Image (cartoon, rainbow, N blue to C red; front, side):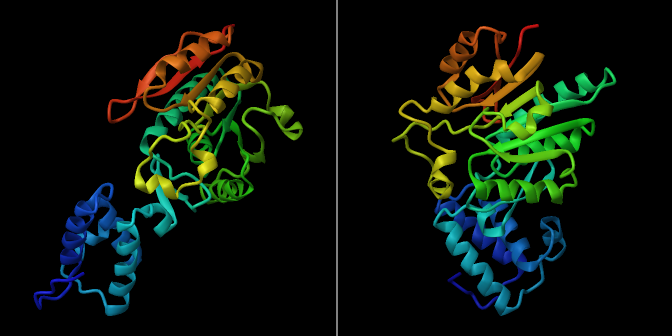
Length: 296
């Protein structure tokens, strides 16, 4: 933070300088990133910064903030720097062992919540499976919003599963979210009592080998990103497995990458017992998720 004019480094001055610096370095959401990092450094909520614009943080906090700004400018994800990310209005612990939860993945939560609430409106409980769960953000968010539902959250990574278990505890749903190791939809024997499932969600790896990704994404776990030459290796297997895991009328919602819509639609139709999918767009207007159901 150079170019000191002799004026004190107030919260407002720190935010403005950092926002401009992040914009030059092409950091995502420069103002939001600056606010998140400064609130983390000061140990306050982000909204509280707006009542502290004239506050001058002590040197130790400024030094700590400067280091976080340096790392963020090198495109290290802000969520990894703070260890936390908001998703579906809930707080999740995040480490470099899991993907950073993103807004587009909230599409899966909204679809699962609507479907499971309809199931539970008939007076029965419901079960759902979130495969490739990572931080557990989808499974936990759905469980928080559908109290009658029991969840299975699975991943191949033991480190990711530790994060998912912690997030289930933090959000008060550990008693209804089982976290187990599994490869896609290979059902663990210990969870057979949950089958068949009323809904399955998945945000699997879908980046093609060799495809360029944003600088910040390069810090995220490779096994959670890449899926073969066309990016469809995991989706291909998962969609083929889904009919055997779903009950009649059960919903499947999967996230996929830009440009993969036609291939995903073909995979769903080829499964035979899944209906024509609805394609959902994210907040940028990009086709991002497919939702289908098992035929009765």
